[in-house]
Amino acid sequence: MGVPGELGEGEKERWRALRAASETPRNPFMEPEFTEAVGLVRPQARVAVVYEGLEPAGFLPHERGPLGQGRAIGLGVSDAQGAILRPGLRLDTGELLRACSLSSFAFDNLEAEQRLFVRYAAEEHATYVIDVEKGYETYESVLRAQSPKFLKTTLAKERRLGRQVGELRFVFDEREPAALRTLMEWKSAQYRRTGRRDRFAQEWITRLVGRLAATRAPECSGTLSVLYAGRRPLAAHFGLRSASVLACWFPAYDPEFAKYSPGLVLHLRMAEAAAAEGIGMLDLGRGAAEYKDALKTGELPVYEGAVTRPGVGAALHWLSREPARRAHSYVRGRPQLAALAARTLKGAARLRRT
Image (cartoon, rainbow, N blue to C red; front, top):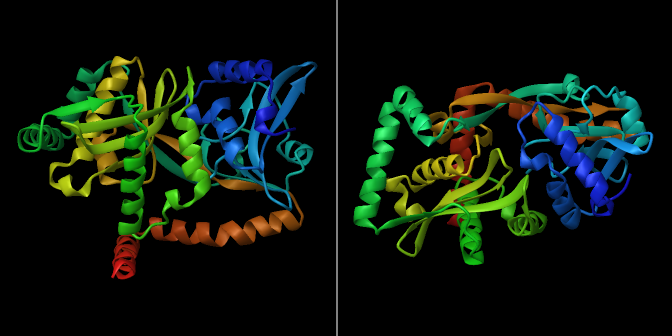
């Protein structure tokens, strides 16, 4: 076991080959480049390597706390988690944790095929996806059938935006650093406006996004997409893409133009561009949202929970995570409480600004 930066090129190639052999979508969060980027900003990042003879047969990227509390690599921002294993490899979960000197292993976006950990899940969530495998026109026809009013309204707003604000221009893979800074400023303001924790106030997340923005690998490439009116950015999104999956991560827009729904327009153009690039799926991530309901064509399961071994570290994991997780689950399962919580967060945010 070592830090991500110590992996040799042969080990990384084996990692990629194991992912290619998996039946799950090729999510870029599960590639070695994401783990390496986290390792550069999180000193507690580790990778356990499972060998069969002289050949690596599996990898477990994780972060290790001071008493052995383990967590999925990048937990809190990573949208796909788990071990990378040879198909059919039989491992004992407890023995793997013991070999890693871990008392627990927590996850909140565990892939569905992670048989090593999924039986320890406490909750199942839906991650929302857009299928563009058959091209953008087919996707639009699906929207026209399932959400005709949404599609008609969004396309009308797009035309009005072009007429009233300026000629629209969409860039799928923008390399201008100023555009990324603008996106992070919009997103920080959105977090504060809605009373949520500002992820970009955490230095390691800002540094991680910067690292990934410069990452260019076939199965893990930082991708910044921007909708412009003339030279003015109206909406932007930063995510990761593989050859077949665009993992949507940080979308935001200029609230001055909210009446035109520039974020929805942006997502339609992202779907169109992704399909043209040969990408078959956009993963919008877990967490209910109106825009996801309008855009999605399907859902995939992801899991939240933890494996624990007896000991002090496992007890600390329970105390630090389980009460909050159960409270969140209780609220999510009761729509009236969830709506009240959202209003309370927004009200608290307004009070902080006054």
